[in-house]
Length: 399
Image (cartoon, rainbow, N blue to C red; front, side, top):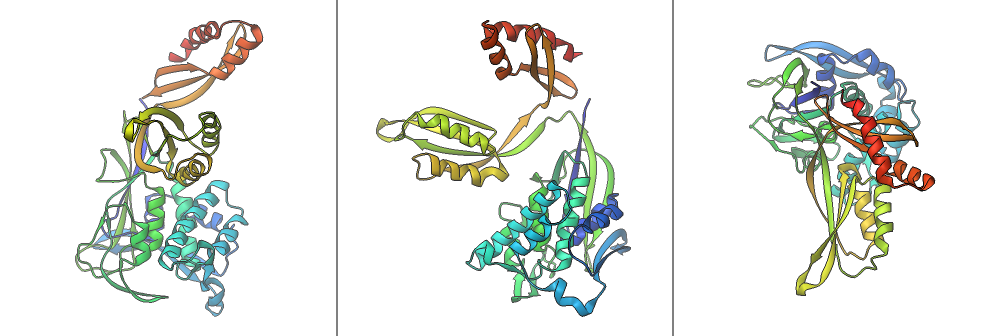
């Protein structure tokens, strides 16, 4: 029986970039590996220090980014634009996956700041988030998250704190406006603690990586890590708790978005091109449903299932390639079998097959249609004959 590796972030006392990194190091992530890979960034003059501290009597890991050369503070703490940070990451020797994740997190923060200041992403300059410690927190957290090897990441509702906080723009209410906007659609609360418990960096990182925000899911607990925040609170330890565990028998649920639009005034010949373009832009599925609109006008419901990171691209494609004036979208979950691809050697040649499994048991075997069609066309035989032979030979994969 297959095991699903899951990780749960318990944000009972908020979340920040340094708390994430501290909790994951406490969980067992190799800090030396993080330091080595952060060395690929063209940012110097700092050290990452790790120490054991106690919060509410609980031992935890505190991560601090400390400048080595305070006289050059401007170099590392000057405001940076999104383009500055993007170029800094892209020019590094980090892996493509780490670059992509890190840039996307900064893009989310930048978009929020741009909305708050009524400007564009390229004109935004980060202050606190552009500082070296925030860059290290985001990229270091991204490295640690990718090292987890988790099939799914969950997080609790997030404790925000309350009161006020001093920043580059003056004294702002807690949660800071950027934090609140980054957490739109995510359950959060305050239990009256007069501190900034959740920072924009923490909100952006967990918002990017978490698949679902909920109570702790059923699991067999394997490890627990605690990352310390900067406060010594009276009644609640300022900690982020991360729990790693396994569960069996759970099919994978992928967070997806369904985009829809009704069309009643477009040349039907265009639909083929629209479908191909949507698949090329990352759609998982595209389908058409005949519907009747007001005054009994016949129309087509165009539905597009996409990963959440592809919503903008798919929506722009629909607006540009069809006659619609707008689209609607909503979040859905897609439960899927574990999928693998194998090849079967038939009397006609090799044919790929898709194999769907649950808990190690093969439930579905599907010949690759394009392979079968190509052979049928070349050999001048019915495609169903090839299908039948492939299915018969592929039964060996069930054992």
